[in-house]
Structures are given as structure tokens and as C-alpha cells.
Length: 348
Ligand SMILES: Cc1cc2nc3c(=O)[nH]c(=O)nc-3n(C[C@H](O)[C@H](O)[C@H](O)COP(=O)(O)O)c2cc1C
Image (cartoon, rainbow, N blue to C red; front, side, top):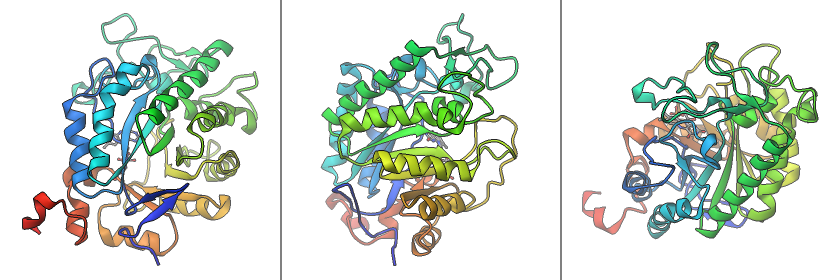
């Protein structure tokens, strides 16, 4: 019987509890560099007792950012700006992962609170986007450039360089962002991949880029905890579905991925998603059972009772919470009697 307060050890790293702060873009960096916003934001959740903080989508190259406000890790200066975040989280007895990301065709966007629309490559803060093919996410947006062989090799080497930097400044987990219609999802979903080369067509070809990147990251990350976030379904009949995801996760397990963070959707616009509490949990459960790999459940999980039930029912191994932890960084302190920072004990 597991509860959210129970520790879990993955690839030799112990997480003091099973609550993960789900990655959430803050759109608050300048030129990809972390600043005091990121220190306070992530630091608060470390003080708040979260077992693993998964840092927001952090771009492996400038053109892989969703917006001009995204974090990046494409140079040593970027790594040095992130190091105080990592060190603070560690000093407060929590663990921190980095979600390595490339937005592909869903890049070059305005900040969400300024409308979130695509910024033309001809405007300030805009750039040419890249993808599997040349279809934009929204009709009428500028077309992405399909990645050629050199472009694919650059994506792989950017991920390797990012993983080395993440390793060297002490991150505990790498999560490869393979979900939400970003670059890898654009390759594995037949909706956005009509390529006729080794990266398109069959299932094996469509998952190839994600698999190659994961292998390359693994080779430098060695045996530290490696997660992949996927979209378990496109929520459209005939496109990517949970059976495809199970097959993908079997391959990822073979390569040495330790945990699948199971999300869904966001590669096909205007799709109706039945977003109710626990709506993605059945996918985490199916992948855990069928691919025999650890999973994280995410999506409208907001209470301890809900989280514990998912763990008790063996539907997932860790619980990723996003918006609830924006509302309440101290969720975990309030839910458990232990691990209060000395400075806060009088408030217990
Ligand atoms: C402000 C915000 C930013 C997000 N940014 C990311 C991100 O960087 N990477 C990612 O994989 N998901 C991102 N998400 C999705 C969340 O990680 C999570 O999967 C989603 O919000 C559902 O969980 P929730 O119901 O607990 O909020 C973001 C969500 C929010 C609200």
C-alpha cells in the first residue's frame, strides 16, 4: 500500500515522497537565462516539501523555445544561471529534475498572458520554426521547416549537450519532453508526420527521433533517473492512441528509461478533451501494467485522498501536480506532519 508520503527509490536516487511538481513554463526568462523568479518559484516548492520538483520545459536550443520567455540550457552561461536553483532545492532536502524540451512547430509564440499567438519570424522575438513536416499547428500560421538530416543530427547533439550540462550542475532527473504536440510528438503522431524517409511512415520510423534522442541522452546521463513525458493519446480516432503509447513505452523501457510521465493531447487543435479529475490516470495505469514500467499520473489531481487512491490502486508510482502547487506551494507540508523547515515549525 503506497501513499503520497512514502519514499520511492529510482535508479539509486531516493525521493522522500511521491509528490512531483509537474513541469510548468513560467515564461519569465530573458534570453533563456534563469533569474530570481525561478529561484523563488522553485525554492518555495522545495521549502514546501515537494519530493521532486520537475523544472519547466527548458529548451535545448533557442529555436526550441515555445516563447522568448522560456528557460534554456544551450550554453554554459545558462547552466550557471540554473545552478543556484538546483543548489537551493538540494539544500532544502528536495530533488530537482529538468524537462529538456524542443517545441518544434509550436515555437515562436507570444507569452500566454499577451495572447499566446504565433510571432512571425519577421517580427522581433519571432523565428523560423521546425517540425517533422511543413504543416503549422494552427491553419494560417507560418509553416515550419521540415527537419533535414543535418537538422535531426543537431537536435540529437543539442540534447546531448544539454544533458551533460544538466548532469554537471547536479540535476537529479532528466525528463525528455515528448508530449503536448512539441517536436517529438510531432514526429510520432501521424497527424503531423507525413515524411517518407526513415523518420516517417511506420510506427518504428515515427518514434525513431524520440528513441534516438533518448538513447543519446542516456549515454551521457548514465544511470541516473531518466523520465519521458508522453501524450498517451491524440484524442482523435485513427491517430496516436494508448496502444501506440504502450508499444512506445516498451521500447523506452528497453533503452533504460525509468518512468513515463503520462499526459495526453495537444498535437491536434480544437479537440475536445474530457478533462475531469483523474482523466489521464487510466493511461498511466495501462502503460504501467502493459509496458511494465513505472508511471507518473497527472491531470486534475488536487487532493491527498485522490493521490493516495491512485497509488493504492497501483495505477501509478508518482503523482504529478501542477496547478494545485501554483495555488499552494505548501500543499505537502499541510498534508504531512514531517519535514517542516525549522524556520516554519512554529506554524505547525
Ligand atoms: C502554467 C502552466 C505551464 C505548463 N508548462 C508545462 C511545461 O513546461 N511542460 C509540460 O510538460 N507541461 C506543462 N504544463 C502542463 C502541466 O505540467 C500539467 O500536465 C497540467 O497542468 C495538468 O495538471 P494539473 O491539472 O495538475 O494542472 C503546464 C501547465 C500550466 C498550468
